[in-house]
Amino acid sequence: MSTSTAAPDIAPTAAAGRYRWVVVALLFMAMVINYVDRQTIGLLKADLSKEFGWSETDYADLVFWFQAAYAIAYLAWGRIMDRIGARWGFGLAFLIWQLAHIATAGARSFGGFVAARVMLGIGEGGGFPGGIKAVAEWFPKKERALATGLFNAGTNIGAIVTPLVVPAIVLAWGWQAAFIVTGVAGLVWLPIWLLVYRRPSEHKKLSAAELAYIQRDPPDPVEKVPWTKLLGYRETWAYAIGKFLIDPVWWMFLFWLPDFLGKRYGLDLKTFGPPLIAIYLLSDVGSVGGGWLSSRLMHMGWSINRARKTTMLICALLAVPVAFAAFASNVWLAVLIIGVATAAHQGFSANLYTLPSDVFPRSAVGSVIGIGGMIGAIGGMAMSKYAGWVLEQIGTYTPIFVVAASAYLLALLVVHLLTPKMEPVKI
Image (cartoon, rainbow, N blue to C red; front, side, top):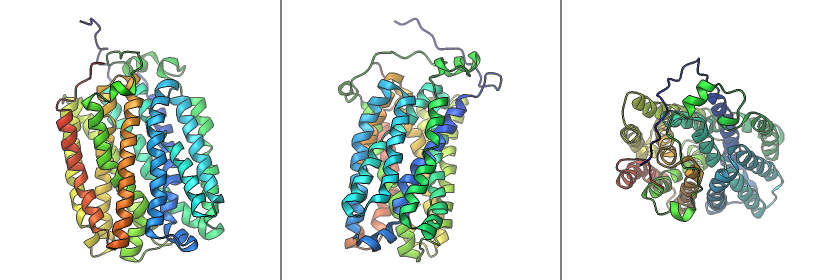
């Protein structure tokens, strides 16, 4: 039996330091940039479809190939993060996706757009494995859901910034400029990340007290864990199947929401900005609130299992009304229903994202995140095909929203059945 003991329960006081939140701020900004890059194509769907003659199936295929590249890359990046660390791994992923975003401006055919989106998917596949790896390195378990929720909130801010910035750029200089201007501006983040980020034990600006607080959990095994071994754990599949069920819903909102608002309520590039901003502001509340709630419950003495699953249940129930979004009599009622659902997704996701770092040693976290992200993206690919088929054959978003409404309760059931106690695995 091991004789090692956990570090003392050091309180996160100002005297101990708060430098770890600088890391969260950098991750937050990276996610803002990530989602500006990702959402631009969805915002321009109507204009690009008209200019290039895309059908609903063509657009669905464009999203499909992005997700296919993202799925494969997510798995690979998880392993890369475990091998070379978050600093260089995240930096390389960021550079790839940013250059791919800029290159989209040069597309002149459907094949050109597919190629650019594939490269974007390859780069963006490293975003969350890198972010979760950094959180696992810089935060004790009790703060990881909050830290994850905070940096994940950057995705919502990116989704807010996009309808504020992109239409103005497009109306002034054309759609190509939207990719070039936002892409070049985003590159400013990369040198800052490389200059600031280090592992806690290697960081000169970190106080001894804060380092002790970060390392309060029992030490992890340092050995690398092969993928084949990780696939044998129920906890890996709890995370992966959960991602398979909920990720497609978020993909759908991201890539089809502007189209829904346009078709159902007659909005366009000049007018759907405020509704999208309202929806993603609500999403931010869910992202931070979901992470805060489970962390708060744990500080009150609740177990990881009880705190995480209670928070996820609340979020799952809040998503159910989105089944009726297409029946809303006016755009702002639809915004409220969808906004609550996207907030629920982000709160649920913030807690699901912490599952690998809650139960696996740090040396395996990136790989488990990669496996789950790949499976989640495969679910997104299926949703893309489904959405394209439904819109072309049925012409209504209701069947799509019904799937979205039920995904979270089903995901929670799977997580609970596979990890009834959510205890650390023995590797």
